[in-house]
Length: 598
Ligand code: M6R
Image (cartoon, rainbow, N blue to C red; front, top):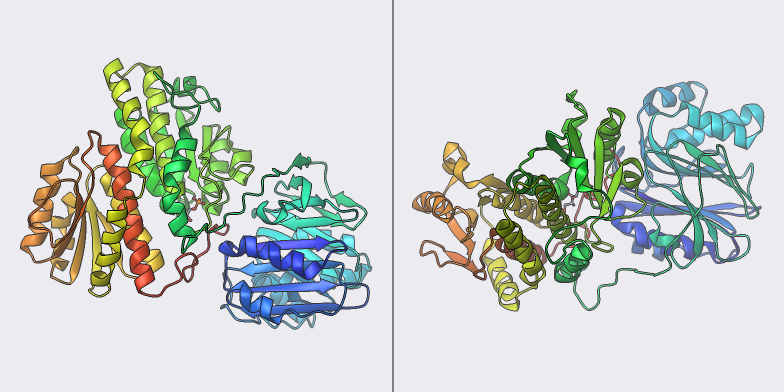
C-alpha cells in the first residue's frame, strides 16, 4: 500500500525513480510523484492516476543526483494532485508509506506556529515538523530524529532537504523499507520491496521497525545497531505478461507450475516433509489458530476443514483486523499460523506480533521471502508462487491452499491419526493437483461466452458447502474486486435462512457442485433456488438439469481436485466479466496489492 523509492548517484535519477515506481505501482495507483534535488534546486513532478501520467510530465534538462518517489493508495485525503506525494515544506520534501495516527494534533500545533498546510494528508505534518525542528537547531539530522520521536502510527519515510542537499534521511516503522548500496560507485537506493532494486544493487538492509538513518553518496549511517546486510537475489524475475492480456491471466495460467514448485521437496513418495519446521511442533498443541485477510483468509478457512479432518486438531480462523481488537484469549497450547501473500499486510503482521508476544509458537505462510512476517514468526514456510502482480490474488491462493493441505497431512502423519491407506490417497491426490490447475481451453472459452450474460441483474450468490464455501467466498471476492458487481459467497445450506428471499431471475447463483463431497445436499439447495426462479450457473462434473448455464469440470476421485479445477473456472469467469465491462483487470479501482495500513 503505497510504494516509495529513493536514489543517490550519478545515473539519470528520474529514470531510476520512475522505473522503480513501475515495479511498485501495484501497491497503489491513485497518484504518483517524484522530487529531484541537487545543490542548486529541488524540482517536483506529480500526476493523478497511473504512473504513465507522471512519466508524460517528467521532462528534465538537469543532472540531479538525489531523488525520492512515491506511488499512492489514498488513505487521508482524496486522490488529488495536491494530496500526491512528495509533500513539501518550505525547503524539504518527504515521501511516506503508512499512516500518522496523531497527525491532527501535530498539525494543529504547527498551524499555531504559522505553518501553512496545502494538502489533506497526514503525511504533510512530517515535513513541517522537520523544518520546525531544523529552524530551531539548524541540525538536519537532529531535526529528523526529533521528528520521528513525535510520530505515532506506521511510517516508512524518505526525506530530502535543501538544508542538507547531499543526503536522504530514512526511517522505517510498520511499513517495509529496504536500503541498498548500488552497483556503481557512490550509489544508494531505497525501495518498499526488492523488485526495484534487482539489477541495480546487490547489498541490502531490510530495515527492522524503529531503524532509520541518513545516507549520502559516500556513507550510510544507521541511528542504531539493529541492522544487517544481506545479498539481494540476482535473478531478475520481473514478472512480464508473456503474451497474456493481463498479469492476472498469466498468473491463472501459471498455477500449474507454481503449485508444482510449492510441492517440491515437500511431497514425498510416502510422506510429507517440511524442512522449515518439524511436525513435532504440534506436540502439546490443542488448537491451531489461523489469522489472515482477504484471499489469504479464504485459504485459511479452507485449511480449517483440512486441519480438523486430516490432523484431528481443532482449528479456528480469524480475520486479522477483527482478531487484533477483540482482546483474544491466547493460550500457549495454540499454534498460530498467519497466511499472507505479501507478508506485509498490516493487520496480519500485528496479529502475528501479538501472538508471538504472548508466547505462542508461530508459522508464517508467505509468498515474499524476507517480508516483515517472515522476520517475526518462529518459522516461515514459503509458498513459492513467484511475483504476483495482479491485484486480484490467484496463484497465491492456490499455492497457499496446497501448502496448507500438505501441512495438515504432515501433522496427521505425526499424530498417527490416519491410516496408511488414507495417507496414500491424500498423497496421490496431491500429486494430481497441478493437472487440475491446467487451464482447460474449453472452460476458458465458456467463461468468455458466459461473461456476456452476467453484466446486469441485482447480484450474485456464490454458494458451496464444506471447503467449497470458502471457495464460494473467494469466487465472490474475485468478482467484486475486478468487476465492481455485487457478489456474496454463502454456505449453500444457509440460503434458506434469509438470503433466498432475494431469489428471482435477476439473482445469479453460481453453484459449486462437487461430485465427491455432499453432492446431494448442495443439489437440494440449488433446487430450492431454482424453484424460486434464480438464474443458476452450476460448476460441476455432473450434468444438472435445472442449470441455466453450466461449466463442466472433470470427473476425479478427490474433492480437493474438484476444488482446484473450480477455482480456475471462477477466476476466469470473474476476469472475463471484468474484461467485458472494460475494467482495468490488473489494477482495479480503489485497491492496492499490499495493504500495509490498518
Ligand atoms: O498479502 P496478503 O495475502 O496478506 O493480502 C491480503 C489481502 O489484502 C488480499 O488477499 C486481497 O484480498 C486480494 N486483493 C484479493 O484478491
